[in-house]
Image 1 (tube, one colour):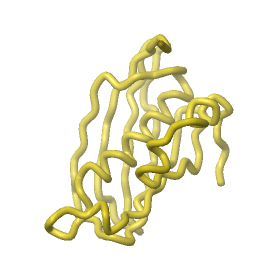
Image 2 (cartoon, helix red, strand yellow):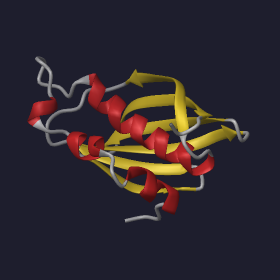
Image 3 (tube, helix red, strand yellow):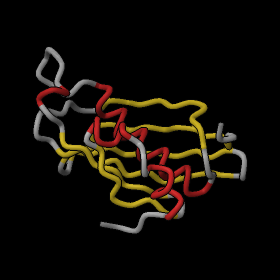
Image 4 (cartoon, one colour):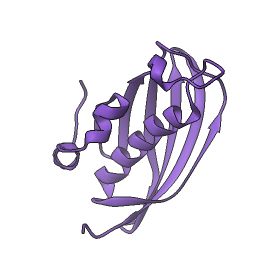
Length: 133
């Protein structure tokens, strides 16, 4: 396992969605993050492919982890994804996020989602500093 910023460990200590989706935070520090997810049969759609929300979820988690290493308590302002290839049950999705811009109030993060050696989705999100309620 890679380095995980202590703030990320605190932030995700009681985050049930990680287990619900099957997300694993591999690393999260200094504006970068890697998150993985193994596609289960329960995550397939009628075409026997992983539902698009699954690729979005792993990308979004990597985005959030990278953003929160440079902007604590960051909240998503916008996010978009381009699906490039289908995934299926048993595929291990790896989302690699890299913060490309941050200024203390917002961060822009690019995420590449791959399955084996194939890029299956590209994601870009913007986060903004938020107050924790």
